[in-house]
Image (cartoon, rainbow, N blue to C red; front, side):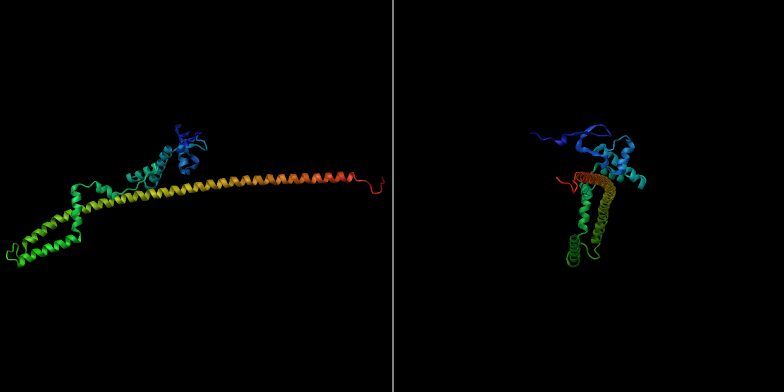
Length: 263
């Protein structure tokens, strides 16, 4: 006994006329009203329960989102287009922007980040203070002072360190700003997609509720018709029963003998 594989069933897309797996077909009645109206606008001759492939649904969903964003925000930017494409293809738009930027760092950028990280740590402050204290102690108390007071060589070294450290820290800050901008763009896309998904979910829920109410109304009409038929049948049965009782009484009364008769 062989089992039938439903994944190999084929169906016809009402829009393209192509044969696709039946599991990729969706009834147009199950779509959001706005999306279904957009499809019917381009294909007015579609039957009531037409089947549409997932590819065509994704295409019309992308058009619908683009039109909605353009009407609400004016001209669409690249971020909005990426959000619309992700909605159409049902793909995730979230990404770890920090890891992506870190993977693209050059050697100079990695060096700047490491120097800035070390320059802003307690290890740098403590070690730098120890070196300066040792330098001053040697030149104040030692017999061979190579940089006597007012420590001109030390001032020169400190100035050079500050001159080199400042642009390195600025380079690291620029990279951090780039990370912040990338994170902000990603947050904007995620928030926009979430807003659109919630709006679509509300539309779909309203559509499902309306369809459910219509079905309940149809079921109620059928129940009312059944009750009316039952009442009609009961009334007819009662009428027939009364007629049968009347006939039976009439027959029994006509066949009864008079009281004074003798056998």
